[in-house]
Length: 127
Length: 170
Image (cartoon, rainbow over all chains, first blue to last red; front, side):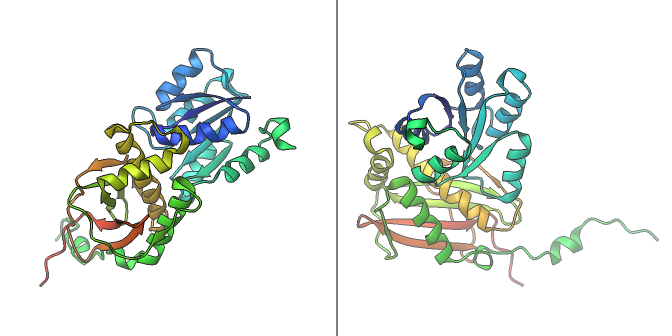
């Protein structure tokens, strides 16, 4: 499984990437939504994208909308991982096309549980 | 005779809540504790005992703009901020931390704490990107909710402070 982790915080990218790598993902990273689109346009096709909301240049919601408007990226699962925890924000993200929403701070177990719900845990980890 | 509605009467009669009407210290501490446990480490606790901040401090903050407008500020000594950064990065921490690492990690902690403080306030509100440096001044001591804690014995303060000056007292 491949993942793309998009967050403007290097520390948070390292934390999310480390958790996903421990679960068997091959991980690529980007520092904002625009960089994330560049990675996708460069031919990297992840099974999962985790994306923060508040970022410079292009925020997470804009990224989700851009990805969802491109049929080539239809199979990609998008998970917002953000400190935006108001109900209205969650509804906006899901309406834009995110599949799941994880509120910071989160534990590795919480992230794993969400991935299991999405059917995105590598088989040997899910067992 | 027609009158022009300037909005003056509405504005003068508007009740602008101060932070202590919306959130208390216990809630702020609970939000910070959750952030510490998840980001810094499961065994990392914040002890609700005030300590004297050293002379060389650094702050990280995010702005909240909405029915209540203000800033969530974390302040601690520079050495403690470096320790927090190492704890946050864990095995990914470089041998020698650069200022950029501390700005990034301490800013992200403010982002997480601020985002959850925002969620506890009336909305809708917007959250700024985090900033790191010298703390923004307290504009109105009545519009301030401050929690002082110790992390690994080192003092750290979390302030939720209004951005607007106090209204004149008549």
